[in-house]
Length: 325
Image (cartoon, rainbow, N blue to C red; front, side, top):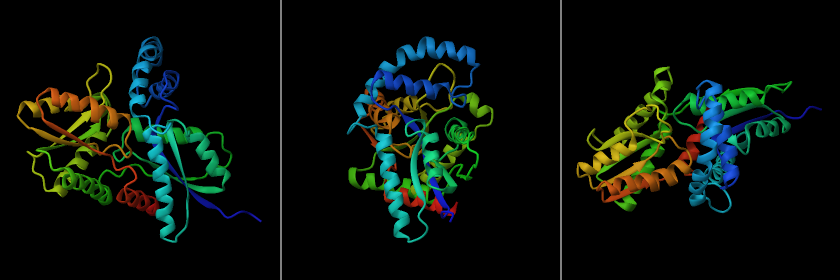
């Protein structure tokens, strides 16, 4: 008798090194930065730059940053991803409906997309719903995740039915979860003079070539500002995490923070809607490096509002996205 066919869910995030060590970070950066979706320079030129310069210097610096946030022998993004999976399983159980098999994977690093897909197929999942945890679509993140899934299935004789969730940047439950976490921070800690919504940047050239990411970031920010009842003078959209010398989409967050401090804006709240889980870019870059930029420019109070992580309203959003798929 044939086994009952099942539905699998692949929760995908960007990735993490296996350890906060120089060799582990080098392996991770090599995999991440070699992806044409991330850096699309001619391969011969990028090979020289990546292997001759970046991977010789950057892993040591980045490993120190990871060491500052590493907790319980794991990276925050992987630890939070596990909690999201458990919470999502309970969400489905409470509704007494069909129970999908839910697994975490990372586009780069572990658990890998290939091994996780093989595990789902081995558990007789003939239909797999892929949810990349990037609310705003970009070829550099969601596109790369889709590539990883396609590549992982190239050797499968019997490819399962796949459902890809492309983005959810304007979903009502997503906007509500963001609004809730900001309002709760204000109620608990007090409200700053200005709200900054910071998104991970992409090169300007990628936007010019048709990547919709900045437009979707702007739509998310406007929806959240509207839900909070903010006018244009009370909030700002900005982009962080630029890398290299090329122009990236603007405004740059460090310049925005300096400008706000120079305008005598004494306190800011910073939230990053692009991240479904706290990671190096939020816990270290946003909460340490860029906080220092603002305070050194004359600002007095800087508060980072954590990512949605395993909040119940975030899990409800994820469950609804999967159920609708």
